[in-house]
Length: 633
Image (cartoon, rainbow, N blue to C red):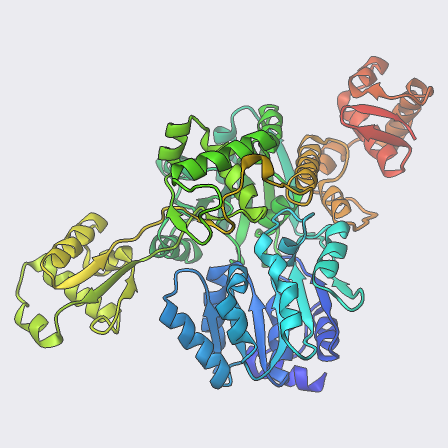
């Protein structure tokens, strides 16, 4: 352990490890496959970076978070540690350069996206790396079919172990996993034996609150105006809504911006920087925002819409109060949310006939004959397809994802195809062409100052970055680049984010499509169960919010938090009153049959006292509650 502490002090400046970091590092150092359950902000990176630096060889890190990859690689390089990353949007030559560096350059860390593991070229090059000392899987719940964010590409990770002719320990890390998912992760990664280290999921400084309201916008503004310290995040379900809410908040006198995956990388970076530095207090965002973000002074996280799982809610709410000071996680809820959330089951898992029809229509759309199509990739227009075949976009998107999971196609709903530029004239000719229009000269100078290699090859650029440097609008930048391209001074290929569909098998007859239980039936059932748990949490009025969240993740808590909306509502009710109400409820339920919760109002005590009594009886395991029904256990 002394060696690990020396590394910790040298590179991170800490004298001791936190929480379960030391146990995880010792386990990895002993060569054991290890699963670490660590809440967001628990210091996961130290758990693999420290032992990897103490070991001979390179650590392979699999993570879906490109922004996190870039941040950690930059951080490691700033410490003098050799690190590289491979992710979507990179040019083929850049990927080969990175793999060469890792093969011949004594690099310590290679970060890759899980999709990269599907590449035969990557797998062949991986075994050429002299030694791999550790495989780390971040967001490991994505490998489990029972996890809330299952990704088929994660299933390729276990196969890496068979490619490497020597034992390499695996470290799986996640912040959100139920006991069922914990077991599944270890099975999927072929752990030699069960080996789990877990921190408590409790965040004692966060007050979890559910606010029932018919006016979510007004309630949100009231809450933001009441909690005035620090910064805030408002989570929504749709990109459109992020912009609408951000504009509403700005019109109401607050500094706010929006964030979603449809923005360019430069736009996302700028908006995140403005929020991180406090120039904007509120970030209104989809769930694309927050992964890898560690801003300490977030005092408030508001969920405008209900997430479709407790795991997603807990992870997003956990971005509040990273500094350990008091913070609030507020979920806005009204009865309409139950119908909206329940409908997501059929939207996300359309009936199998609809999926087969979508596959058939896709084949017609691209003119792919039966037995043909293997390896062919097409740009896909959702609007054009849905108009032509009279399908709804939401169910079509879900059908394509399910066909992707079943292995018939590879569907990418968003492709990070950045704009690229290459100069077609040499430096001397470009100098002679100077003194053109002011805007043109400004754009050329900004290109030359911001990017290297423009005269030798295509280079990825960000029009938004050029806009900030020159002061020109993005439209002016685009038009100027197009004009330079028409003049054959540069070759400019603008950004494209159109979805793509690749046929990974020859076209099959629709009635021959197989949607296995692991792809459809089991996943649909599990998804419906997660939504039920989310609705139970939002609509519950009897159990401490923190205790309910901990119980979901398999952790027992004997104490109430004392600060959630449920605990505050029960604070002034005496135990004598609770005992009296409990006796009346038990008398009503003495037949031990299920009764509707609404029947309890017949015993003529207040709803708040009924809630307190039910909460007490639930904690003591005296009653069983199923949906809106209750009976004695």
